[in-house]
Image 1 (tube, rainbow, N blue to C red):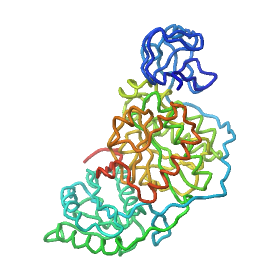
Image 2 (image 1 turned 90 degrees about the horizontal axis):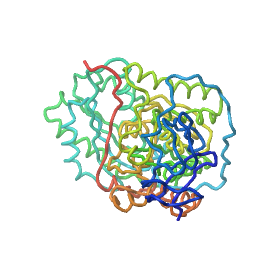
Image 3 (image 1 turned 180 degrees about the vertical axis):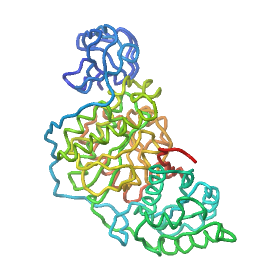
Length: 490
């Protein structure tokens, strides 16, 4: 097992794959202090003001002279990023060879032709005022789970009223996306009756729907809304429980990708593993979605140059600059990143974080760019506008059509999303210590496992999840939901 890795030949720093003690020698370099796992070591002298290079790209500027063998981190490295930038389209070849042999998973086929990996009944409040009622209904409805029903879950939120403009539009679109999600075999939409985003308004966003599977209850119009909703869920249960799994090609899978609680190992193990998986799925005709735009800053040109056309490039430029302007409009620093946990794990600057984060995109061309709450329509690698916040971004991926969300992490988290949320650890220590959280250990890549073999194992695992195998957060009964708040509250 290697103790040190130099990710790219052009790098002037190496990364510790395990805790390194002062005096450790490698490649003629003597480490001058203790270095935690995931942190950087200068593998050549770096002068003050020079670029520190990792992943073959600058991750910031040295703020003082750094000697070979010294620890490189926030004390001697700062971001080199500016604010709004001018971009030029310099396309690079980014083609994934199509695979002729497409495996299948056991999923559900909806009446509109869409594939699903779960058969659940969802309770969707139109407004936060009925959240407590929705949770009470969820609790009482557990006895109605039968047949092929995987879960009955309420997705509460604080919105649906006292909103204006785009903020209100986003809430309505996200709720409609959830109601239309194929993983929901049945949906109860619970309204209050006096809210801005009431059921009559929301129906305009939902569009056509199966009346036997999408039901509506207005609480103010019922003598006992709990009893009425349980009656409706009983009807849904009788219908949904009869659904059966069938063979569906993995080319119909839509997989969301994001990371959280990252460490210095994330860009070496977990994120490249997800990137390799993304390439495999795209080669089979499937679809992946990458989000958390603020964690593209500093690596955005790598994505831009893989855009399949100038039109997609222009949409990617807009994606990046719109998010920067969002920060500027709120008088906030664009580069207020990485988090304290990221820094403790070895990530020093936003460029460092972003270059690791975008490893999840693999090598495939970028086929499309989606607005927040926009549903995916093109097969291949898509980019989605959403913030880095774990719950908000994972919800956005689900709302855009992801059947499953892949979540890489170096520090771990128990959270979930409206769809199965697969936790992939960047290091083996986390996988062993938090086995109740972690579904797949990518830390094996730091222990001489090959990415080809591990990505094949990961693909097999995702097919099992798509076929009904529950992930750890599902076993724990966790289901989270968060809408992106972007506006005033009345």
